[in-house]
Image (cartoon, rainbow, N blue to C red; front, side, top):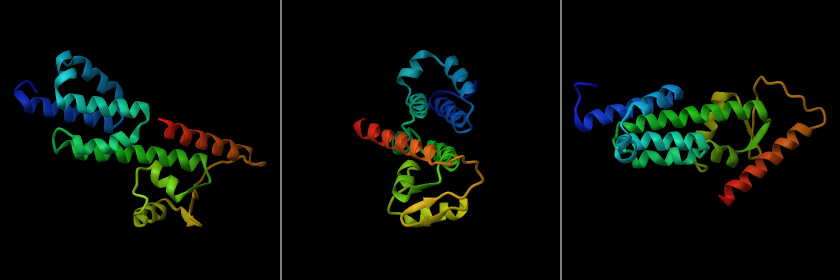
Length: 171
């Protein structure tokens, strides 16, 4: 980037930061951030944007990442935001599949930042993952080891999810 000047240089640095976020290379993200002048961290929109995405990622406020695409400082950033949202969805899906047996369609759509009214997208995801949709619920059918002889673990998870929903409503 030594030969690149001006706004184009900052665009490329911002894209590199986004690439590091999308590919999960957080340590490299922070190393690059430390090499940048402090003034760019506070005033340069090409740098501030990936910083805010990383903050939302750390906080778990994934809806901010989804909404951020509209405020990207350059069109090129949109592809990386989409990639980050896809990465988040995949992580959430893996977590849901390993910890739950089912979830309501509405809750699944909310958690995965999908449009609740877009049933085709949800059905497509279900068919890709081998899930079934029954009675407004998505039933996960993955290879996982559940030890729910008395259902205690399932009810504990339900309480945790309910608590998380209440916290989200408060915030």
